[in-house]
Image 1 (cartoon, rainbow, N blue to C red):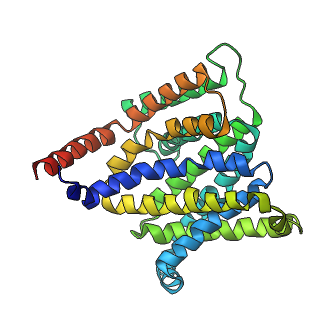
Image 2: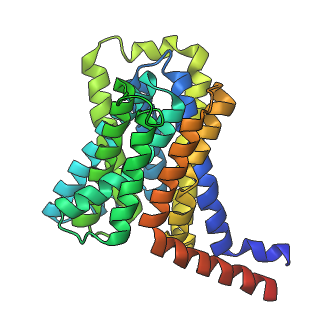
Image 3: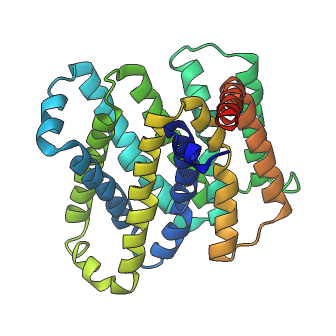
Amino acid sequence: MDLEKLKDPGTLGSLASIVSKFTARTDVVFGKMLLGSATPILVAFVEIASAWLLLFLYIGIKPFFQKMRELERTEFLSITISAILSSVLGPLFFLNGLKATSAINTSLLVNLNPLFLSIVAVFVFKEELTKKLLVGVSFMALGTLYLSTKGFTEGMTLNNGDFLIILSAMSFSLGTLIFKKYVHTPNISLLVAYRAMVGTIILGGILLFSSQNEFSKIMHLQPILHILLAYALIGVIATYVLHYYALENTTMTNNALFTLSSPIIGVVYASAFLGEKIEFVHVISMIIMICGLLVTKFDMIQKALILTKMRFKHLHNN
């Protein structure tokens, strides 16, 4: 196979999707490093403001506001609610939870999004409850129960940090569902830029009014400024760039397939960079949760594998 064939946009899009999963999951590592000296609000502000600046530079300020005026009132209200859930509450729950629990637990519990997405979709938006969905959700719930009971050897032992991570998954899931259900504008980067702007304004306002000295603390964070910068560049900007390149050059089915690697990457990062011990209960919980993801996304993953096989066959033949 000629290496030039690897420059095919579809192949590069798939590679970008894979790499984006590795950059995105650095949030547990950078978060743990930062939260020892910085507040969750400050870290969340740096994260969302970095995304906002990147997307504004990509779209342009004038085109952004011109296109936002074209949104219907229902869409505008929906995306604003989605922004509060996904760009304010979700990150704050996540970072406060990460501060109070292990990075390994965080890496596992944050992947409960499909569980809550399914529950809300069925009971709130009246979508069909299929057998695959029911089995997949059951696996996700079982994996969570196995983790929280330490392999069914104890009672439920979710600490405050674990509970906050679950709340963050619920916030992200509800925000995503509202976004998908009521927002129909095809320009996704525009809408994500608006969500980031709302998050930046609200978190900035909280920083400004919650403590007069909060912004001044940034000047006293010189020992970790390089970590803040690395987080913004790797965990946020690189992830956004790779993610949007992947969306434009590969399929949603491929992205669904690569998402399965997220809990594994997070657990490995926590062990390699933070020195956290991977226990047997973590491995089994991760396997159960991945099985749940496989079942809920089975049709998409099956299609992704077929398309990937066809693509590599085409590259090999040419």
